[in-house]
Image (cartoon, rainbow, N blue to C red; front, side):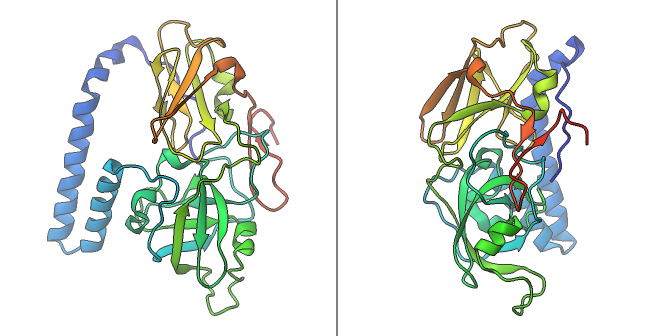
Length: 295
């Protein structure tokens, strides 16, 4: 789940003409994947072919809204004692709910297959062997494997009373769980908060920023900064802006986020957090990891 943490560097002017071919490149890649799916079917690998098909279909599906629930066929496993700095990289310094999980992309998740849009949202995982637990999406599990469901940090696993492997399930895996997108906030407060991506702080400037808005239970769809459209950063819900060619990404610039229900929230960039710390969920680890501290 660890992602490359170096902030993007400004592209050179010679690469700018490629921007207009982005759509064609994306379509070509999609056709290659479709051809791979057909080949897999021909050579007798239907399961893998379905995984490719499921992944392509899920990329184009609409987002889940609060209340959306899967069937009771989702894989759930324990993750680790704590989350890590990769994946969603939720900003440090805020009062988070206690539990977290990594979300996979098995087709059975339906509209809840992992997407950047779900980072920071609260899911309820309900396995009949235990009891329901609500946890924040803090990372992605085995991205593009199309085979995994949810991975609970150990304290969330314990809260769900799913046992320690001594209950006839030594692998610590259940395959009959239900996952629901809740309408709960990830913080103990209800106001939206914005923050710059923790590992982008050292490279941030009026030409480049990476910013996200959090604590809304509705999935984010898009964002603009100083009127410039952003692009999702890695596997997170932060948006990268730049390089712009002009120093317009200043602290008085408007950061506007649009959500799946059509609502928008606007804050000044200067009101967004600029901590280099990532929040770490788990037993005794709710203190954050600071990218500017060398251990």
